[in-house]
Amino acid sequence: MTLVQKAIANLLRFDSCTISDALDNLGLPGAVHGLPPQTLIGKRVAGRAVTVKLGPPIEGLPKRHLGAGAVMAAETGDIIVVENRGRTDVSGWGGLLSRGALRKGVSAVVVDGAFRDIDEARELGLPIFARNAVPITARGRIAEHDFNCPVTIAGIAVQPGDWLLADGSGVVFVPAIRLDAVIEVAETILAKEQLMARDIEAGIPIGDVMGADYEDMLKMIGKNND
Image 1 (tube, rainbow, N blue to C red):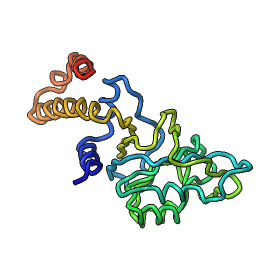
Image 2 (spheres, rainbow, N blue to C red):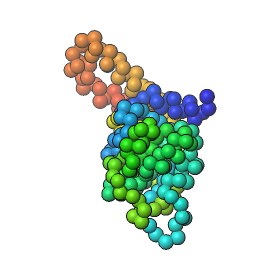
Image 3 (cartoon, one colour):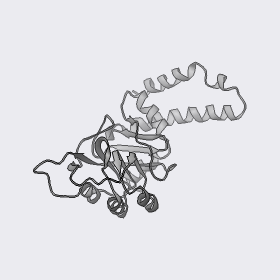
Image 4 (cartoon, rainbow, N blue to C red):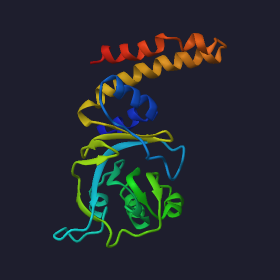
């Protein structure tokens, strides 16, 4: 197993809520809102970000289809992350791109905006997290400004190679240089919450399980891992 495969497997042990809590405890941004799963609801994915930056058409941009460069640059297990500033009136991803991404081994796509060919993506089995689906083409409306560059997704700065985890609750980004620290905190949070879940299932009143010390417990985890 490669280091990348190990990192992906490590992240997949957690859900997005646990990783979000770990980021909070370390004082790191990373959890975004408004990007729910649009296909394969219930599928958890993790991987490194291969980024795409979209914007209005301007003179001098390279003549390439949006997203194509990122698909070609992607490696197995990567996740393509598309900045389109939350634009929901036009597609920032489509069916042919989904096919090409799957052929390269891409595990998911995140679009800060809309995408199209949702039924095709569902049939292909590609997880897509986005604001909504629309049928309207990008042609003449938006263009690719760059790929494998810094992007902003729902207010969160994302660098190529950063890590992300996405599931039914949403999407969280983890800076590549802080992955080990986030995983360490997440492990502590998960262990404590599993004990609390066990107590609830054993019949202990939830008020006793989730007392005032719950918030303090989370704060102490963060302090212990600074």
